[in-house]
Length: 109
Length: 115
Image (cartoon, rainbow over all chains, first blue to last red; front, top):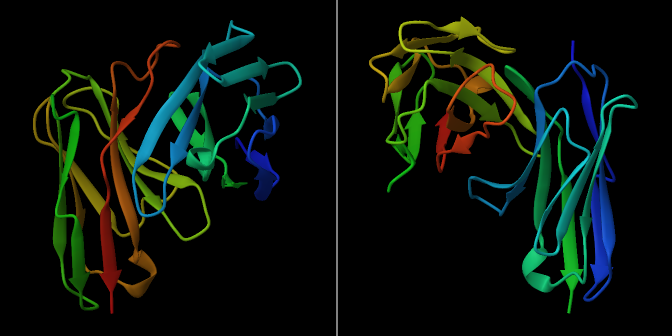
């Protein structure tokens, strides 16, 4: 059974700091890995999708990497802003998806 | 372009009551999914439909049934609601269940409370 772990569970940083969110998974037989953002009381917004054959994807200040052999992905956020405050979820997709419990990020002005 | 829509947005049920959550997508996607999210946790897959005419159990199917009404619509039914089913329910869709490059798109969620 696939298990997905996100560390840390919560993170608080000052505005402008670069930060890394971690996602680890136990079964490397995946199609892709997707990072989402979730604001309180809202749905999920897709940030980045990395296919199993890819090493990284970039969108603006976000960069996601994937090391399938070690079962790890990271989401790098550059020059964090208060508007980045949200919960970030990773989902490992092998047909069916398995989600981590998320990292709640607070960026202080 | 509405994407994935869900109705209702909020619902309160008494234990033992039944209800159906509706989901529709307008992206011509083949695959659709139902998840639940409990406080402080990630999403857990309840049921999915890899293609029109098929449905399969996910991680937590007990107490639920689904119907893939057509390619656009996928409903989730609670036959006899229990307090343990208090949760936020999300519907999602994707182009294909098996392909590597297709991401999932999510609806806004239904917040269900069972008293």
